Image (cartoon, rainbow over all chains, first blue to last red; front, side):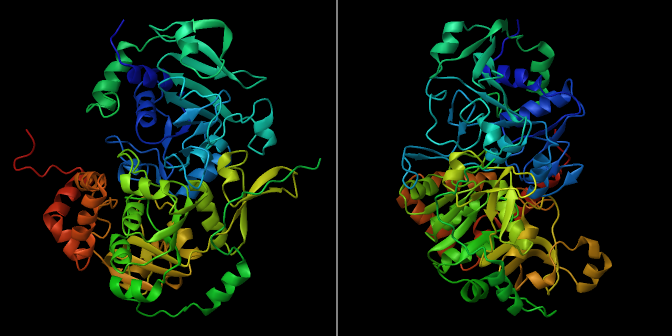
Length: 256
Length: 334
């Protein structure tokens, strides 16, 4: 088995979920690296979009901002934020990736604040940016994150971006588009999906080097388990080579 | 089926009434006249304490730096800001203690560069009143205003704490019965947008991703353009399909070459990442940051002095090579 770190593992696993011909809106960092890896391996026609307006660029390097000129370098279109968001709202965007300080069992994500007083937060983060919009409007939301019992919490201090809200049918009842929601949570330890009925987080596969106990011990709520738990197929040599040599040669992301 | 409709609890900082907006726009000049001005005069005469402002571009991409600095130099107070991926622009305005209200989509962060310590301190102290939104929400609030409406029905922000601390309302669609978010139209008092080219009347062209700037120009009551270069009205008329903002939206035009520095200007120059890093480092200690602001903004007369202080044309040449992926080493890179 090849040698890899947990960021490389998460990126390689996540990239396998992006099929050829799909559309994905990404931010800077790991999500962008994931989409680039998918494009350079099995999905040459993956359409990568950025929320400030860039559509299908030939990325010469990793962008610093989702609005910098790399995001529309030799692109198909340099459009606008409403153009991208309306394309999501129309149902034309398949995937997006989000990050956050907290996530709960329904895949709700907090990237706004820690504390209980909105006007005087204990810790303030940037807020939604486009995250709430993408989580609301893209078909499938994914998250890549290291897993610990603080981040995987029984209750988010603030729900910035919607997962399945209170579970069951509550997401659709809140008015969010039918058939959308969190799809995969990819951590250093495991791959999770969501139960079809209850919409609770459900472990599908365990990553190399971790046990069932590790996965539950590093989670602040009770996880559901698929009937058959898979062993995650570790990163392949060619995935790692392309990731290291072509996607992130300066190790900006995989060196973290 | 009757549905329970919720309302966001936070303050709506602007008036969404389209007839009030029309009454203002009725008085706005449609004359094809020269609007050439300078940053000092624009900020002194077009912006007053307490105004609601919108900034074009995307935080550290295509930003009107000359106007942002002048707002700080003239010590404008109690401004409200559309925090629509506000990054370096937010750093500047918070550094000058100019803002006391903010419609938040994205603040205090600088994307992949990390967080601004000073902006974070200011926000966590409770000095700036926040209403929560999202990037699409602010885009669509501006679009509603650009259309001359009072709100836009949308399908984002529903069901979340973001909605709870917004000033949006849930509504029932009269056709389908589905629940939508009604986002109130946003008519800013003042907007500053940096463009690639415009003529003296304010007919402007923007290249690259345009973010929400077309709607921002239409929705705002007073608009100043800073431009990389002035072009002739003849040139505008040769390619009318390239006109991104028409003259009637614009109140003032200022030619500011390299005017997005230290931000990125698509097809012109890349962002000065080393300088932005310096700024972030200076913010760690409030005393250090005060000295930094004194040197960079209060101590410089205008944008040209500021650019000189930070490397001038030579710096721009480097950033230009970076933007265009040109190898400028003698004999080429080894």
